[in-house]
Length: 418
Image (tube, rainbow, N blue to C red; front, side, top):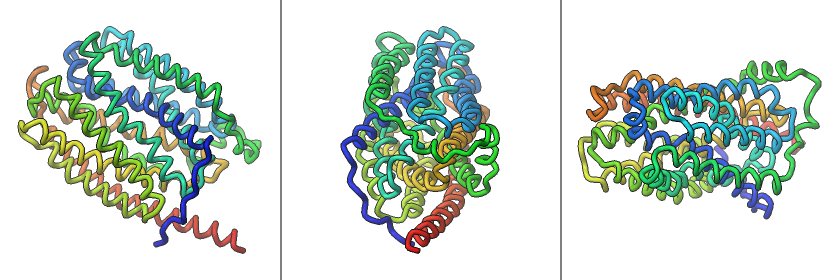
């Protein structure tokens, strides 16, 4: 199996764009991620059961999936900058509504609105990255852009929890809105149009373009691989804070340290994983990360009350595995579609990913039970076994994706040489 060719350096504008997309992803990821550490507070403040909280989490995912499918037919027919600004503006409004919610029903509706817009942003960003960066640069780009996940834990979640302790659970959403307005202004003023794909479009209508992207058998493999990869993360994440507080007996004040140190680990690891993804076999890197995530997930879901430092170490190792598999998986997946279909493919992929994750959150909410709002979660260990089985399936499916991408790249190289 061939290794990637030598990676090219980034231009100043590319570096600016990477930073801008990373900041944008930070706000979108934080908006979703903050629900987990706020989970115990929300469940008690709004008197939600685990199944009701699972519905709040999954509502974002399902609405994001639906909007992505609807937007996929149009995703390649507009300047990607214009699309990005439109959906980001809707995301900001949805997040504002979350902060203004005062009941379970209002929060549920606000999450649906946020998902309708926020769920499409990631696919547009990935289409921009794939359009503007060569394959042997994308691993590093994905590493930095997806580092938003880690930074949200290092800075976003601890700060959000601090604000929540001072002013209530509404405060983190208002903080995200203020930050997102500044980022939206930078996109509008400084980002160049991304419209090279428009010259490749046919006269087919949007729905025909959507159907062609959905029915392409090659693309379907990528859809399935990324969707399956999402299920496990969505199953464990929503009840993480409630599990640590009610089962592992940490305090609400301990949670920022768990997320802080896990995030710091990810900040260090993700750029390394991005560089490795550009230099070594991507499937090997994906497999190593998957196996680490599998083992640590099994341990994490069955731990008794243990000291905070042990929870921090275990959580950090689990996130190293998760990040170690996501970067090579995303990089391989970005190589599947043709440029003329890239926006539609990324949008459909993101939609199915969100819906699969939403299904995982719903299933987790049905598996996990709680006798009272202060009693331990029951059956959380069962989630670990389910996630482990899904991880093994992902390894098998991602190998097929890897071989397919290798064949496509070899065929393109042969055409160029001729």
